[in-house]
Structure formats: structure tokens, C-alpha cells
Image (cartoon, rainbow, N blue to C red; front, side, top):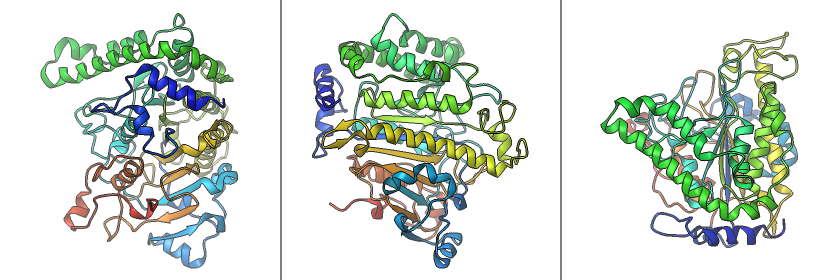
Length: 467
């Protein structure tokens, strides 16, 4: 795939309409970086929290361990320390790993679920459309590096005994009061992203999306007016955007067909009898292919939810226990809840490692695709099963061209509502500023910090690369 850069340039110039507001072309946006190549972002959302101690390094000195337990600000180089056991799948990429502790997310939804709020830094009113205050950060990044699909959302969630299927409501948001759609199983994701391009007769994105809208919004269409009707019209606008996108993709189908990797086990991984690890692997293959073929530069992947069945982990071949039960201390076959939580995290990071391995194989510019990719693995509901938003840890895996100065470091920021503390909004402001959006502050402010008159606007300066 040595001609991938030419392929992407032709794709952008050939369609002529992947534009920023105000008319800036995707090519002009990518030229904000000297190599003229797009940057990529993969948000991997997990449920059930990550307790901060689970990210603490086992080889901390006594002084570092004490500071970590007291939640005092400090940082260490990861190359001087061992990883926690569950981070071992990333051991061979340790020079690309960063750990960020001490962020807070009290201005977002907490408890069992965060819904759209963890990506948008607002109180969402649980999952209401009226609570969606702004485009989520993944959509803002997708605007900086446009692509045919713009943004792709994937989700492996269920109803405690089986997985969702088809096109369903997602958690990201393209704009205020708009909920994104997502692909809920690997087969649908593959069909809608690729078969609709290489074999238009095989499936129809338009029909699938209209079916979703009919199911989700038919009541509003019949009985509501005013503001609620406007929210429905936003969905209709999304369908029209998909129709326009598909017209563009027709022009690209020949190139995409030639560059489409073989996706192994998608059919088996998407089947009713597939285990959770099999579905995750199949969805990861779809995610990788969407990036490699240039269909998207930003993917948000809800790798599990509290209702996701824990099926296929060692010792549990059935599907009668959910992540929610594990969060309340449930186990199986003599395996404790804490051990199961760790097995789940290991499975997640095996998928992250799979993405890194694959992108490292694809030449791009003077290096590989991974050089310009950032993977963010984080608990969508913060520091525990019943979270309260004091801490929102992130594990970042990023290539050599990453614009954030975090890889190779364990960084603990000052604790919530103390001098120098940083919030989820500061973190997303840092990402956006580093990649070309000069926004002064992204997201809502923390009310307790506001009462204490603590500064909370802007980027986290210690994570920005010096020019």
C-alpha cells in the first residue's frame, strides 16, 4: 500500500466537497501538519470504571506510592517501571504508552453510565436529546481531519443475555440535540461500511438508517411538534447527509475495493453464537479496515457496557452474567469479581494491541499509519462501578507524530478542586488545541471549582509539545 497517500489525495480532490465550515478543504486542513497527512483518533470506551489504584505502577518508590495514594501531583517515566499486570498486552509498545491520572469529570454524567456526556463534557439528563449541549469531542476532531464517513461509531452492548444488532442510537453527537447512530454488531458494521461500497446491490445504508429512524422516531413524527419535531428533523438531515456521502463513495469504490483488507472471521464474530471476545475481535477488524481504507479518521468504540454479556472468558462459557453483576461483586466458577474485571480489561487491551500491530504494518509517508494515530482507552463512567467523577483515568497509546506530550509518562495531576487541578474539559481542550482547533475551552466548567475561584479554563500546558 505504498501509494496510500496518493489514494487519499485523489479521494479528497476527486470529490471536491469534503469541506470545513467556511470552505476549507480537507487537504488544506491536513496541511496544518508539515507532512500533509491526516491524524487519526480511536476512542475506546469501557464500562464499570477503572479504579485509579488499578493503574498504579507496581514498582513505584515508597515516595511515589505515597504520593499516588494521597493523590498528589507527580510524574514518572514509564521506562523506569513495570506495568500493572493487565497492561501487559501493551508492554511491547511501552514507548508509545502514556497514563493520565487525576482528571475529574464531575461536570459530566456519573453513576452507572455517562451516555453522551463523557465525550461532550456536559450533564446530559441521562440520555435525553435536550441534554446534548454540543458536538462531542470525537466529532470535533473529525472536522479537523475530514473523511468520507467523517466519524464512525461502533458499539458492543446488549440486554444482559444477548447483544444489540443493526443500526441503533449511539453516544456521540454531531451537534447540539442530535444523537449519533452507531453500528451495534460486526456484520452490520462491515455491511454498511464496506459492502455498500464494493457491492451496492448487497445492502443499503439508506434503508438501514431509515429503518432505525422509523423505529426510534415514529411516535415523535406522529404526535410531537415544535422543539421535539426539530430534533426529528435533525435525524432526517443525517439521512440526507448519508445519501450525499454515498454518492461520493461511488466515485471511490474502485480504489476502496483495491485497498480493502481481508477481514477475517467477521461473519463468525457477528453471529448469534459468537462469544464476547469473538465479537470484539471481529469489530476490531472492521475498525482497522475503516481506517486503512481511509473511510474515516475518527472511530468511537464502546467495547462493552454494563449490560454486555460476559460470555467466552475462561471459566464462563455461558452468558448468564453481565458486567453490571460483576460490578456488584458477582463472580463465576470460583473466580472473583476483581479477577473477572482484570480479565475483561486484558481482553480490551489485546484489541488495542491488535490495532497497533496492524497500523504499524501499513506504510504511510516516511513511517507507518500508526505514527499519526492516537488511541484513548478510558472508563466512560470514571473511577468505579458507581462513579462520582472525582477521577477519570486515561490510557493513551500513540505514534511518533502524536501532538500530545504524554507517551512514555505516568502523569498524576493535582486532585479535584485543588490548585492546578485539571478536568475532562481541560483534557479535550488540550487535544483540540494540539491538533488545530484553537478553542479557548471545550466543555462545561466544574461548579465546585468555580465556587472556589480555581482556574479551570484552557489546555493542560504540561501535555502540549513545545513548538
